[in-house]
Image 1 (cartoon, rainbow, N blue to C red):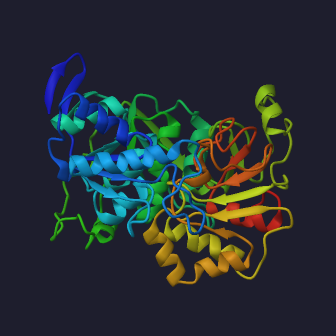
Image 2 (image 1 turned 180 degrees about the vertical axis):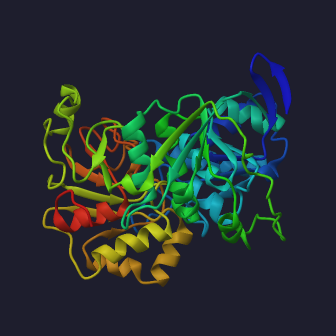
Image 3 (image 1 turned 180 degrees about the horizontal axis):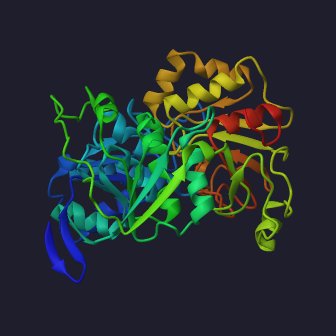
Length: 433
C-alpha cells in the first residue's frame, strides 16, 4: 500500500472479476488505448447477468441486443488471455457464488468486480467491493487501485438465533433498524456469537447485503469454518495458511458500533421499495409509511403483511441460491404443491450447485411441487429488458433489492429468506414456514 495523502491510498489488487454486461467494454477500452492486462492469471470473467436460464438455453440471452455482450466479452477475454467461465462451462454461475466455490477468494486478499454485491465475498475475511468499468481497467492494467480509506463499523449479533431465523433475517433487521444509509462510508465487520455460528453460505448472505446498507463492504473474520470450506478448492493454496492473524485486535476501536440481540430477530420480509422497508412477518406496516411507496406496492399503512396474496415466488440470486438455501427451501415444499395461480421458479446460483442439487433429488422435489427448475445465472433478480413477470405482479423473492421496477415494470417485490419464499409459494400468500 502506498499512502497518496488526502485520505487516499494506492493498494494492490489480488483478484479481478468481470461479467458480460461490462467486461467487454473494459477490455475493449484497454485494447483501444494500447494497454494490456498486467497479470491475466489474476483476472476472471463469467457469463452470469443476462444469460437465459430456461432449460436448453444454448448460448442465448433474452435481453434485446444482449447477444453482443456475450460474444464480445468472449472474444475480448480470449484475446486478453484471462480465464472465462462461459455460458455452458460446467463451472459457470453467478460471480459471487463461483468465486468462493473455486477458492478464488481467500482470506486477506483484495477482490474487485463491476458489481455492487462483490461484498458477498467479504465473508472470507477478504476486502471485496464493487467498482466501475474504468476502475476495472486501471486495476487490470496496473494491478493497483486508488481507494479512499473508509471508516470502520462493527455490527455485533450477540446471543443465539431463534429456530427458523436466517442470515437474511439478520441483515433485513439491521436495515429496518438503521436504514439503507446506515453503513455509508464504512467497512462493516459482522461479529458476535450468532455470526460465528453461521456456516459459510449463510455468512455470504449476510455480507451480500452490506451494499444495501450503503457500506463500502462487509466482512467476517476467517476461522476454522472458513478453512474447512476452502480446503481442496481449485484455486486455494495447498496446504492452506492458518490466516490466524486476520482478526480484530481485542482493544480495536471502531468509528461506530451497533449491537443486535440475535434472539430478538424474527423471520423478516420487506414491505416497500427499499430493503430498509422491512418488518417481522408477525408485524404490520408502519402507520407513517410513505404514501408514494404504499401506492406503488399496493398496500396500506397499518396492514398486516402476513397473508398478503402473491403472484410469483422466486428463489435465486447471489444472496440465496446456494445448495444450503435450496435444501432448506426443498424441505418446506416437499410433498406439497404451489398454490393455484402462483408462478414459482428456482434458479441455482451456479452450474455446480445445480448438479449437486440434482444429485440429491432436489430438482425433483421442486418440480413435483410445481416450481420451474432453471439453469444458473442472475436471471429474474433484476430486469434487463428481456424476461420479466406479468405486469403488476406481486413477487416474494430471495433476492436483495426491491426498488420500483427492479424485477420488471410495475413489479412489486418483497424480499425474504428462501424458507419464507417457499412457504409463501405453497400458501399463495406471504407467510412464515
